[in-house]
Image (cartoon, rainbow over the protein chains, first blue to last red):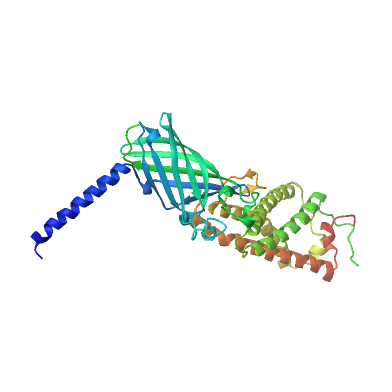
Length: 194
Length: 187
């Protein structure tokens, strides 16, 4: 129980941790700040816009504004964290006809190409997977920087029926429109100067 | 047979049409509200809720028209003989019921509209015309407002029943032909 006995082991452990964190930071130097980030969606029910959002999501981002083509972005969204603001609707969303959370707990996005369009604008192409359905999407992203934080914002429209979100009686687009507007605001740290 | 009084002035045709159309609409929308409130989550429920809101806003608009008409067109006074036979409390009840009904024609739909806005569901009339939110989306406010739409609707239902009971009493017990003032056609 002498400190001298444990000290070498402690040092070793600390060294291992440092090496490990250094390794991950080389792979993905950019980190998502979830508290300042938001992934929201707007669906239309009989013409009425209904705001929703995902409370839990994460990202693995390797992004250099100077070399966008070499960048990769991957997202995971816990679809079970979806909320549209009313408890009676929220308990429906995880069910099989909507997100089928027990079978498909996460939606993912994996970029295949990132193209710089100039003045902080980028075009990210990739595969969006929701509920086991994979579709190609092209997402415009605009970056703004203030201090150490880079905000990535963008919006795109997805066709809910392509992902089977809302099946059977809920597939009727006169009730719930096919187009769902997805809006995101992602706070990232560790992004190089634009 | 009903003895109609040829000397009793009748309501104007516009007032008569608005009375019966809105009367039927109010009974319909009240029944709809009772039915849909306990439905499970389904497209049918979503449809009914939206139809209920569209109907409510339409009734509100027609009620505004009706009030405007009433304010610009003097309704017929109670026929002298009938008025004389009515005890004082009935005169109070007669005017009180009408005033309260007019207040509720506006209060019930406006409270419903406010609730919908507060709950985060702006009203889009007939699915195409977005109506303004006069209260901001606010869950706590929505919960506060919710019971008042129901309470005010039940209050209106109570007054409507009273109104119908009084009309039927005049028609079938007093047999004074008072109802003829509000019936369409020549009498």
